[in-house]
Structure formats: structure tokens, C-alpha cells
Figure 1 (cartoon, rainbow, N blue to C red):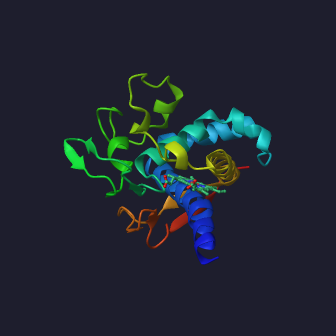
Figure 2: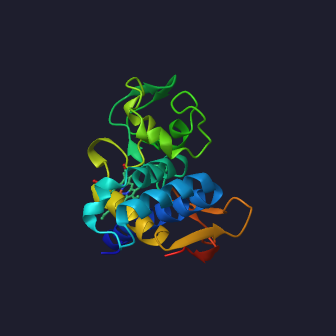
Figure 3: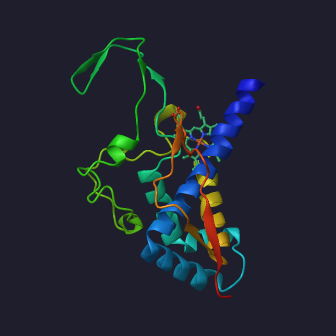
Length: 201
Ligand code: HEM
């Protein structure tokens, strides 16, 4: 029971909450992105609260989430056990070794993502390079243990972003990069203090 509850909270709640917090962080640091997002939300929602049907009409909001999960993936390390002897990056990995792939490294690589350290949601609106390795971007994991909640999680975050940004601007108060309390889940240690600014109706 304890293990099941822990996974439910970590996998289903902390990840989504973390993705939302980092989205608001990046939006506050990149006002031109936030303005474009607000424009899309205003045009699509027409002043009404979002409905599930709006999801497909919010491509820029979806790109904001994709880019948030590239730079600051909610889960950035996963655990695996090598089932057989293999070689990775010139290192011999004997069968039975515990291996921890870290998504953040390829996701911040210039080789796969030009201007890798910049928050650029636009990059997700273009066709993606066909030669990019499949797991160079894998915020929801890969293989047999790929996130079973990923479709739901994306809807949840985009819908919440639309609902909040329709009415509010969140200005991050501190100039410092948030302190991270990291145990595989890239979570802000002290939350994200913000100033709430009401948008014009
Ligand atoms: C932005 C939100 C989310 C992110 C970034 C995320 C990320 C991930 C990642 C990277 C894994 C793979 C772990 C591994 O390979 O060992 C995973 C697994 C999993 N996720 Fe998510 N997740 C999110 C939301 C959700 C939600 C909303 C649910 C449930 C409603 C969920 C349920 C699960 C479960 C049950 C697994 C384990 C699957 C298995 O081991 O077979 N996740 N998630």
C-alpha cells in the first residue's frame, strides 16, 4: 500500500505539478513567449474558461509544455538494470548493473537542439529533424515503462495553463534560479513565489 501510494503521488501528481511550476517560471523569464501564449489563449477561448475540446486548438500552449519538459523535465533520471552485458559510450556495463539514464543531458545538447539553453517553444511548431535519436527527447520515458499517464498529463497541464493565463500573469519574484530539491524529480525546494497580476478581461 505504501509503495503504491508513493508511486501514485510521485508519478501522477508531483510530475504534473512540477511541469506547471516550471512552465510558469519559464513564462515569467520570457515575456515575449508569455505574450504569444496569452494571444493564442485569448483568440481560442474568446474570454470563456477552457473546455477539453480547446486542447487541439492550443498548439503554442502545447509547445510551451514540450519546451518546459525539455529544459526542466519533471523526472530527469530513471532506473534500469542491465539484462545483459553491453557497451554504452565506450563503457562496459556488465549484466545486472544498475543504470540511471539522465534525460536532461541529451535534451540540453546543442547537437540535438540548437540554442539548447534557450526557452524556445517555437522549435516544437516545426517538423523535427528525422535524424535526431529517438531518446534525445524523452520526458515521459521510453520503452516498456513509458509513462502511462502522458496523454492525460499533457491535457491537464495545457488546460491549467490556459485557465490560469486567461486571467492572470504570474511574475516570479526572485532573480535567482530556484533551488531544486532533487531526488530524480526536478522539484523546486521552496516553491515558486510569484506576484499575481490580473489581466484585463
Ligand atoms: C508532466 C507530467 C508527467 C511526466 C513528466 C511523467 C514522466 C514519467 C516518466 C519519465 C516515466 C518513466 C519512468 C521510468 O522509465 O522508470 C513515467 C512513468 C509513469 N507515469 Fe508518468 N509522468 C507524468 C504524469 C503522469 C500522470 C498524470 C500519471 C497518472 C495519471 C502518470 C503515471 C505514471 C506511471 C504509473 C508510470 C509507471 C509506468 C510503469 O512503470 O510501467 N504519470 N512518467
